[in-house]
Length: 216
Length: 224
Image 1: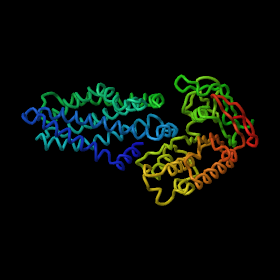
Image 2: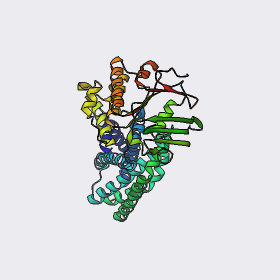
Image 3: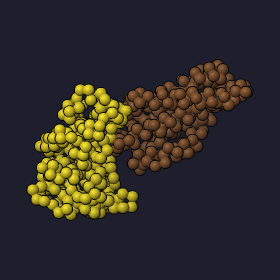
Image 4: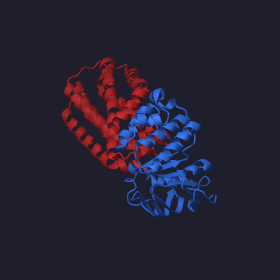
């Protein structure tokens, strides 16, 4: 499932030609907006990074379910006999892989555009891994929920953003510690991210099957 | 009836609040090829989708290949192959990649390989590496038919299978249906191309208003 989704993205080049440039554009626009005060830009770098990741996650999730909506692919998926939990994990893994690649691009952008340096690389990597898992799992679950609705494009952000707000908060605080702009204990936030990741993955494994049926 | 593959008795299925199937009675034995005819909205497509476990049965009895659709409609899906109006293809994958995904996802020990399926539908060679969005409607239909072969199913559910196919594609499809039936596969075909489909069928079921109105041997013209 993950291989199929990633192959589709490689062939369509939507992630590389559209989502990646969009992510960099968001970073640049933030830089334009806050440029008069580079101190604020530096202080806000972690939050701006994760907001940009969140925007990209919305695009990646919508794309992940859009490919299943064309020409009856969703019915074929249901007929395949694949375990719904496996479908969920596969789709979430593909979204996570795309987000991880985007985070590398965005991270490079933050270092270059916002003039930040790394104080805790291990902390940042662990934060990114756990936050990405949480975003991908929650996104895949709510993507399935919205996929069967006519207004899915506009409904998904409304459903998903409140749910992943805790991930955004914890990832921002942990990243601030990793970038040396925050004063708190970054690892405490990482533990919270771990809890969110486990909850979202577990909930997705259980709930994805019924959602796939009900939203078809 | 020996080895009943499809058993429906007063089966009811809803599309929203509308009863698309309003008490269907139908028994189909193993190896039969049954043509379903009837006007648009008669319930043919819903009946096929119900037999595939895609739409719920809300009342009556319904079992397919021994699986009770009212209790667990998901378990039958692995054993059936549905060719619906849509092709189910991923536009950005190549023809071969689409079929490989079907073969891996179904995880059935089909005697037909992806290369065999491509070859039997005239898709081998350059077409196999073409992305699906570049195919014509008829070529997409051929790929969908090729996917049927990879599922190694005991029941084929074909909804307007000839639609979009050229003469060669129709001949190939008819041969595949005849071969499958000869090998013991049960086939339900919903079609408006009655002459063509009747030649394949052993029985003709006429539907109207979500019910079976006539059930006759293929040699006898059914009530429309």
